[in-house]
Length: 155
Image 1 (cartoon, rainbow, N blue to C red):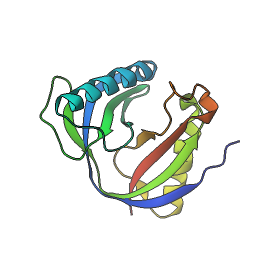
Image 2: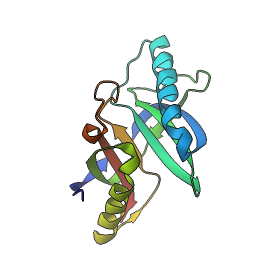
Image 3: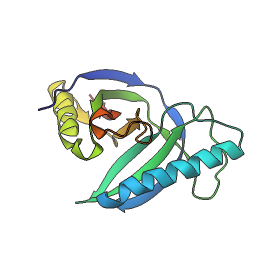
Image 4: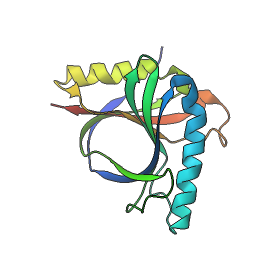
């Protein structure tokens, strides 16, 4: 059984560049790689680099379907380029944890975050996101992958 260290953070709004799609759970992994490549190329055309690690934000739209927004934080927005669009991650209170392990075993971590928020008198507010601190191409062992999970909440 995994243990989770959860902290509260007060986030500032973060400008992002993203690709967005509605997908089944099975389609998400391949989409993330393709979307990050598209955003990286769009930023390079503008002479920009990401200002932080890649992320994916998830909005459940069905039993096994999500509206997924994948990209990078940036210092400023860029003009839309094909499927790449400006977006943002919201400001406000959030429960945050660093999960270590395979992506397909994160469900319990999300449950722990929701329980922590409820225990601290809040309720999830808005869509959570994952910040990918490990690159599977550089770290082949899924048990070592590090992902920061962010769950915004309202008091």
